[in-house]
Image (cartoon, rainbow, N blue to C red; front, side, top):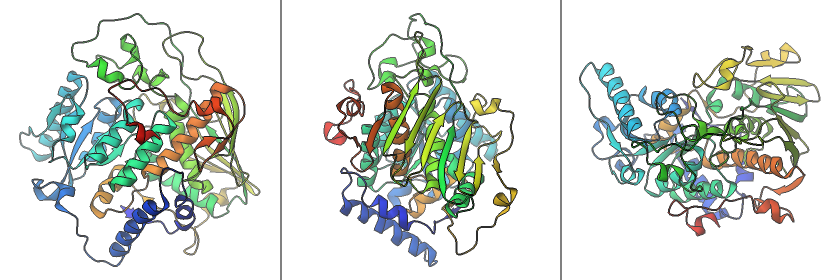
Length: 483
């Protein structure tokens, strides 16, 4: 399941100098522990893991998992991605909609009952995530909530001693993403970002081909994202008795309830919050976090970001759903490579080099039935200007990247080994923060100059004011965490 990368030196050098908020000493200390663990495993020695990693009462040393957020992505992707492994057991669920808690318990108990051939009722439901995190039998959590809850839940989870699988994007704002990565680094917990393209063979192979010069010197990258339609104005509706809407809003402003702002009360179709800027930035982070991360992998810029970004976007003039529509933004990196992101490009990533081009996408693969990719007709997941680029063999002395065959499985492996997963916190933050810089440009419609080291804009108070949002009490991260 897990093959450590043989090309970490460049990224580790960059990572050791990242941002003011992570000290060089603390980061190198964490990296040293991870390297030591890798060396022990490579030598064939058994790994000694503290009992607290698995829970004192975990049968057969299974990893006990709690699921926070049990909507669409949880039911069809995260829960099945975990319960298929015998070394893990989903024992707790939490959601702010009591109907969804009940549905999740039925779903998980039913799966284990069918798998074992015996009646099963081993899942505890929670209405408040603090109570789930206080359960000492829970070793790790999978966070599948709306975007505006991602960072704060991750911080509280690692502070409670839990390992974390965190759905992308990593955060709602750049400040929250930095706080999340800092907290994970300080805690020593294992956090995996749900950027499952890292565990999809064509994305890793594409990155290796680009890194090994199969298209010559990399010059520019085109990232194509699917679009989101706008919507009508929606009337205020009574808050369902099953939903803790006040807490669901979290750190964001108090606004009236309407079903299309939240999620369907019947069924698990694509929720409306994905199209509300109050809770997320739209497709620039929704799918952009995937594609920018995969592009960074091939560009060898995983722990940095662009130095200048420009562009524009159209936004709906009215209606409940107000995320960006048609757009085009361009980032320039310190090495001169340009990344252009637009909905006008095919959904995927196209790398242009001095000797050819390479295109990679998911093809017809989708995570959920309502994914925009499910509507695409092109099944081709990998294409190139010359077929010989794709059939090229990566030699033993060339760059081989971290290999994972399954994102959830890799996380479970790393919980046991205490090695870093394929999508650690800082890497997920860097992909997300890049997307958020592009989103800031969409709003400003002018060029900005970004410093990836300090994570601030150069001489631009207006842009810097958009690095964070006001937080509604009590759903806040401590000011010192966001500093």
